[in-house]
Length: 340
Ligand code: WQD
Image (cartoon, rainbow, N blue to C red; front, side, top):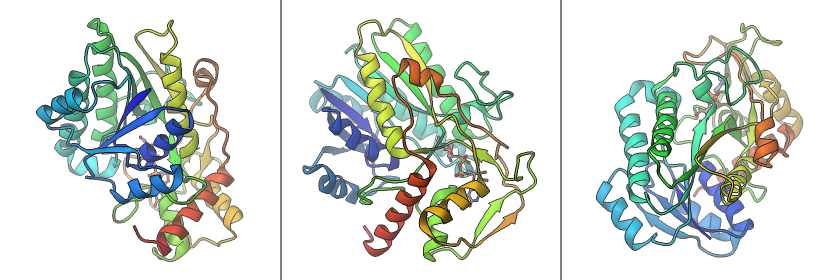
């Protein structure tokens, strides 16, 4: 079964391509390379033994997307839509860049493949929950006002999906609300490739450990949490990739209709200081860090209740924090010795 994977050369997209192939699907990768590296295609080829189908495509170009849908993707049966900008801090500085890219690409894809009975998996985020009133957060928790334009694009995108379904569309849709994706493929041939200074915790940890960064700043040590640092639900990117396969399989069942939402997390919260300790234990590397003032926009603590995903999606995270840290470290060592 042919599956269109937009943003398929990105961090989560590339790991998902491998899981799709492992599950017997035939992925067609599109990417505009604005936030990914064409060399990931070679890396994927090393892992899977053949070069996945790839097309460079600007999803904001409506005519180009329509032409692609008609000429190159006439027989796809599923879509996994990753393509979007996702840096919370950058979205505050450049909101229009985020609204244009994240909305134009989604609407163009939905438009071009309308009426084909396609199953669509949408890459959403726990940022739709803001700071939940109750933890762990469940899928029916109230969606809080977005903390950033990035979070707003995910909230509004989910509304767009719901409106398309309500209009009587023949799409089936699943929105996966990711918590914090970290780690790398066991081969260490693909992983997280932040451009410039990493915004996210784990790539900053590995770059500090390898000497690319002098010191990790822990943004905030005075939160109302057990050790004062923020708590998040970190999930291995390979587990996350497998959740997308589970979502496709659920929609292939006759009794699935319309749209549904699932938390993709471990159900366990880990503080920043706990992640640092887990990294040091997994790698034997002592990390140079200091407690610094809080970062604007951070929620204090959020972790997901993944019960619905286990019961309905037949999916559960299997890889632990130790594996997340060791795989991230192996990737950092690989990429430092083998720049792409
Ligand atoms: C985690 C914690 C920081 C860097 C991410 C994605 C977002 C969404 C959810 C997908 C926070 C602290 C970080 C550093 C630090 N994923 N930190 N020093 O903000 O939870 O959001 O996951 O949609 O798109 O960005 O992740 O890794 O930036 O921060 O102390 O140098 O680590 O303050 O408490 P975040 P993060």
